[in-house]
Length: 122
Length: 489
Image (tube, rainbow over all chains, first blue to last red; front, side, top):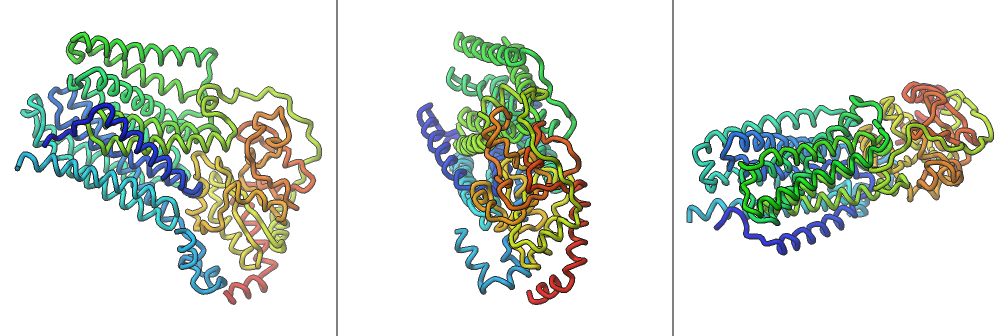
């Protein structure tokens, strides 16, 4: 088995087309309120470039390749780790009136607001 | 068997990672599931990075003698790059999120360009198609790197003024054409049998340098209000560059992740541009002039200042209040105080909602995050289209730190540079209070006709100070009522 999948131009175009379409549809359903975490989250996802960086660096034969490869991994790792850290932090802050940190409103609503809210959001 | 196992593990893990990325992003469709979604994606990323070290079982002949060094360098780069970014990401203030995202994004673009450079300098790219794709990916990635760094510097206040020179568009265009021409020359030369890495490394450097230069030149003239669009564009660019390098490395996980992000960036860019009523092309290639020289429509009325305490008490006795927060609120760090005030109003039985404009903040949705940070529940936060019909039935609108996004001139004054931009129709409410530091103009430098309207009053002062006064005034008079309803709750 080869390390690199045999991939001709047209197979690549199929992958690109389907991935682009899937991305468009999935992202289109993200509400505006989450657009900042979405942007940093998708930013995190393209941090997968670090894997390509590791591949390039491991296969580096000359000092120049090694130097550039090192920076590619350095930057890619920063992209992935930083993107994850900020996205996770932001998403942890989004809460409803029904969640435990907002007791006053919970008490006024009819019983089971958490369930109702969760059901509506799904 | 032993030789077949590492490639199988890598390819299978990458497949799982690609699935987890898509599934994680899909879970972002609701704030309820979003946090777990990013965890799924994180697991995929971690697994993909770990198995990527299995590539050691299949390295090129040329790299064999250096394998130990290369592994050490890779580990070092992962720990240093990942560790420092993780640390900065944990520490950064929510108001500084746009520049942080720009920075991480630029790093991704730089990594993609770096991979392309290693492949080209190492002479590993076979065939004209692969070489062209590598170079295009390198171009986009390098533009994203240098452009994002300039965007970061601007958002962080290192560069304060948009730099605009006469004939800049033509000059930028020439740089792009020259860079593309060098790229084309490289492809043609490689087709003719030249070994690029040994015969013409200078041209490869010129190509990369041209791309970096263009990224800088493209970002420099773009100013404040257009920054969200610029960040979205670079996000899409990095995604595209990653996808293209994924094709070169024959790694479908990179291709899928890159393309999905490319599509996401494009979609967000479109949404942003629509919210500002400016085409993407206009944002990138023609800019708000240094000072708008258009004729301002005649202003009727006068500015009517009011005391913060009085405004607070008026809202306490209103039936419904909508709050329009803008970036000025974040600058004054007033989100916590604002929600404290809102809780007082809610305790007194006032219906309170937040109305957020898509371009409130320096990146899409930033104001929503800042409100979430202040523990405002997201079911109180409404977006432009959902809340606009409600303004005419609303007693009081409190505008804090927002300006251009509530300027009715966007609806009425054809000469205004923001004419046609979707705005929050706050002028239709019965009463409007605008909290503002002084009589200055907004980001676009346009006079806001709302401030002169009959039903609008100005509360001058720093947002945090004003809110503190409002809280004190409402507490002072409503002590009995407010306390009772809170006890009941």
